[in-house]
Length: 323
Image 1 (tube, rainbow, N blue to C red):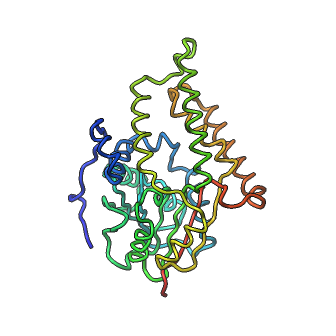
Image 2: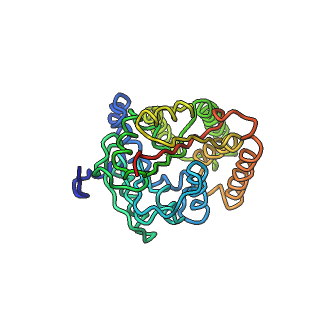
Image 3: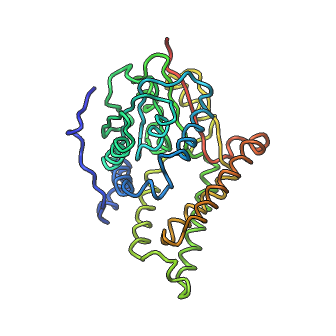
């Protein structure tokens, strides 16, 4: 299967209320509208960068679930690439030499390719459905994704496609997927923080801490779509079963972020609710240092006593049979 860049649809960054209403009943339309909507501001919203901080983060996720691998892989694909965060940082971290990115959102593919060009990385991209990946069999040495599987209606079908485009012996690594228990407490914390922040900033003496109402309304509309595009949460053992059923070997899931998630979700929600100029270097340092410290607590202490299903993120890896 082949596709060319000029066949890709153009980004559609501003959905109307009518389009949002239609998307509530059509998950794939919702995926496109939501992610096109978010594409140009996504890196800022999630504090994504392409420097040492996020290179170390991406490489850390890869190593945590895949273990020690002979590197680099020659050609890698990122499924549901978003702005290219995972693959581009993995390439900078020595995991792959060349790359391809796919996403259902034209806006995200556009930004990912722009980011790759800015970094001087050899990457091509296509707008594509993860359930029908537009590349030939046995094309890639590695397929990766970050926070993508929970958006895909048929996860097992997508993993079959991943295995199809992998070369025999090729590996996939997916990270950043929400666990069922983790998603419950993270969403609760996020909603509580949003409600508290937007209520308190209505007070006259805190008015300059409140985003313009139009921005808050747009965030609420985006949140309505987010509820539609987030299709799954995963029990780690169940995700392993899905990967094995798709045909993968050497399947292994790992989890991370328990204490770190309890801080991270309120922090990110607060950042989305107040004007960015109010949060200076000191806030950024607090947020990052706090996350790093609690991630250390998770890894060194809590991982040994808390069941893996209670952690927020699940990662999974597997290998295509052969070779």
